[in-house]
Length: 106
Ligand SMILES: Cc1cc2nc3c(=O)[nH]c(=O)nc-3n(C[C@H](O)[C@H](O)[C@H](O)COP(=O)(O)O)c2cc1C
Image (cartoon, rainbow, N blue to C red):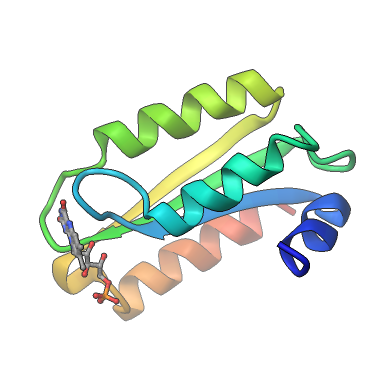
């Protein structure tokens, strides 16, 4: 958290990213989120996004619901959710999709 907190406090957008482990984001990401409780919404950020990867096609419902509830609670606008399943992970097409998403946020 010594590295996460300064980045979080100065962030102009928050991007949560995790592989899916048993239909949820990882324990590591949840541990960081639960420490963010001490701050709440980052002072400069208005938007958030979620990047998820998985082996199977659609295990995302729980992680997305949790993320959307968190955005609403913190007052962050959900800018989008991108998922990558199986062979999409690390593929040129998925990387291009993420780059286009990031460009559109400018
Ligand atoms: C402990 C564990 C639990 C996992 N649970 C799921 C799951 O519920 N659904 C799924 O589609 N993939 C599951 N996976 C696969 C990971 O989501 C997948 O390996 C990852 O998104 C792809 O990243 P990688 O290419 O770095 O492994 C699990 C992997 C691990 C290690």
